[in-house]
Every structure is written in C-alpha cells, then in structure tokens.
Amino acid sequence: MKSQDFIIEPDGLILITGASGFIGPRLLTSLVDIGFRNLRCLVRTQGSEFSRHDSIARALDQGARVEVFRGNLLSREDCDAAVRNAKVVFHLAAGRGEKSIPEAYRNSVVTTRNLLEASSRHGCLKRFVNVGSFTVYSNERKPHRRLLDESCPVEKNPQLRGDAYTFAKAKQDELVAEYSQRFGIPSVIVRPGYVIGPGNPGMSGRVGVGTFGVFLHLGGSNVVPFTYVDNCADAIALAGVKRGVDGEVFNIVDDDLPSSREFLRLYKRNVRPFRSIYLPHVLSYVLCLLWERYSTWSEGQLPAAFNRRIWHAYWKKTRYSNEKAKDRLGWKPKVSMAEALRRHLEACRLGTVDN
Image (cartoon, rainbow, N blue to C red):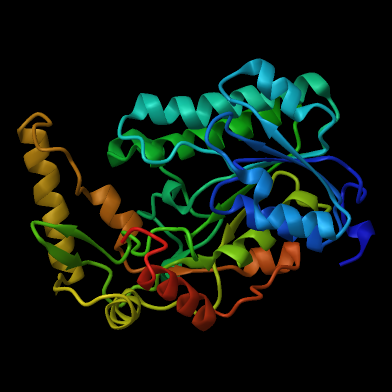
C-alpha cells in the first residue's frame, strides 16, 4: 500500500490507548510495519511494564519513535496531554470484567468522552478509531440468509441483555457517532469478533458455558466469529490511516471460520478433555426463555444470566462477512485460521491463559 493511500504522513503522531493490553502491542507492530514512525502509547499509571515490551524494541529497531505515556483516561488533564498533536487516535482501552453497568460505563464511556472532548479542543485530529465489539449487534432481525454484517441493527436497549460490557460498548459507539456528527470529529468504528491468540481466554461464550458442574455446548454447528490477534491488529491499523473511510463501521473476522463443534473438539484434543453436553438450538432457546421468565418472576433474585437477547447474539444460526474490510481497507488475514487455532490452543495448553 502506498503512502498516498494514507491520511497522514509517516511522521504524523499516532496515539494508542490501551497500548499494553492484548491487541495494543500488535497494533504498534502493524503500524510500524506499514511505515509509521511516531507513536505515543498510553498505558495505566500503575502496574505497566510496557516500556520493556518486545513490540517497542522491534519498533525502535526499525527507526520508529515510541513514547510511553502514563496516564488515566478518567482524568481530563491526562487525556488533554495524551491527545496533544495526535493526528490519529486508536482507542483500544475499555473496561473489561466489570459486573456493574455503572462501573463499565465509567471505564468505557466516560473515558471515551474525555478523549473526544480533548481531541475536539486541540483541533488537529484526522481520525478517531473506536475499537468496539461484535457484542453490540442484536442479531434478532437480520437480512436474508442469516448473514451478520455492518448493516445489521445493534441493541437499542443494551441494558436488557444483562451484560455490563455489552451495554458499555454500545453506549461508547453511540457517543463516538454523536461527537462525529456534532463536532465534526472524523471517526471510524471497528468491531472485531472474538479475538484469539496467546494472552486471551481460551473458550468463547459463543461455544458454550460452564454451569452446574458441566459444560453446556450451545453453539453446535454455528460458525464462531474468530479473528487472530495479529490479523485483527492489521485491520485496525488500516482503518485508522486509510483514506476515504470516515464514518464507516468495519466488522473484523478471519477466513475459514470453524464451527463451534469443530473448535470444541480441537480444544478437548489439544488442551484438556472435559465433559460437555450439547443442547440443540431449540432447547437452548427454551432454556433462555424459561430462565428469563423466572428471573422476572423472582424480581431479579435469579440474575438473567440466560435470556433471549443473549441467545440471539451468541447462539442463533448466523454467518459472518469480512468483505467490507477486504474491499474498503485492502485488508486480508495474514495468519491462516488453521495456524491461528494451532497457536491459540498451544498457548491454552501451556497455561499462558486461564481456561
């Protein structure tokens, strides 16, 4: 890809938030590989040893300038300093693992608002890239042939899903779209599927869940929207610098996606065997319906861990497309799905992730 295809010059300053997370170091590598040499990596003020990460050493070896900026996105002053002179912002930082909606909102939405407001004040931003999630799609009313792509509707009432992360990511996307429209901040939203690779938990909830001492296999023959972390980082990098894609949404999934059943079989064979019970789709839907109704009847004493919105999003028969990312960004997965699964399962087996 030629430099004239990009919105900034090679020395234009790029900010990466969440740089020390799972995708962040790979994104740094992807940007350096396509020629960018001036990067600022925002990491948390405490507990990060990112300055010694291999990706930084590789970037420096290729002549890039890498600044490690320690700050807190809940601080407006830190956000103002982080975005100063930045031409492109890649916003990867997000609250993960929070159980409550207020905490998830604080760590994903409030932080994003602080970054957007700081960007608006400085007035030099060429693009704000928000890294979202597939979880925001409702998947209840799709076009024909069960295809989920960028045209599909997102959850209008994400709080009813009962998942704080989904709520926060949906509200984060809404906020980015609002600031883009109201204040003219050029933006792109990237929604990866389930990102696999060394460093991320080994079993997607789209395959099934462990409950009552047994693993319930709920995915069956559904394909799982995997993307390998290096492939995902390449797509995010292109979404940030490619000309002509402002205002777009890109779903990121790899080619040759395995079915839930195929992945579960590989996991048992290559990581560890365990007992699982397959629930056909009709039964899994009924389970979610009954659980949802009992939760309502008990006035929330039994949390709605299973409900029909979750079933539609995770276990309904669905196909996925990466054609838009390939066509508009010129992206294609460099690591094959077979090799991605091999690396991921090997990492799980060696205990580099908690399964």
